[in-house]
Image (cartoon, rainbow, N blue to C red; front, top):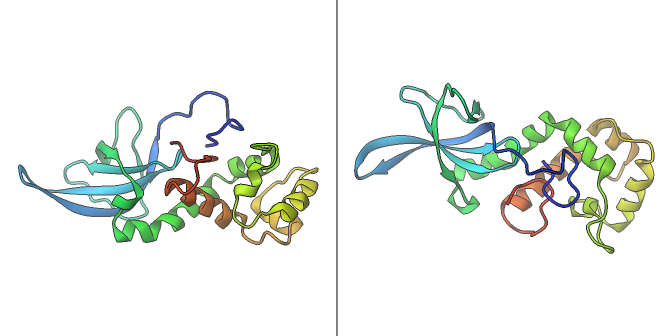
Length: 190
């Protein structure tokens, strides 16, 4: 999950995606084949944007979680390619932040670990400052509060009144990284 020198899961390279959430299903017309369904999705580990080809006869729906790892796949025939954000459909773009928030909520323990263990990136910049809503003053308050480790998003909200929606702030940071608006990667693999 953490993809910089301050990784918290482990020090080795993160594994490839095993699960993805469907953002949109579209028909792709190809001159040499009949119309094919293509699903745009986001991986749940590294937040990789993907184009997936479903197995024949499988009907995918937006918001559906599908297995895309090694071994037998029930719904997905193959991963066609990784996608750039500008290649997403309008529906995929509108679903992206909400889907990221769902993933963040599902992986709350990992993100709480980030809040408890995050350190400086440089002498002048702390990794927590990259989270929307956390500036220098709030950083100081948050670091003081984490002397006793945070237990949940709700615990962060109770103890850090300035930070009303940590899940959404993390999701917004992930979106910034997906869109390539910052070179520093905390959560998204390059």
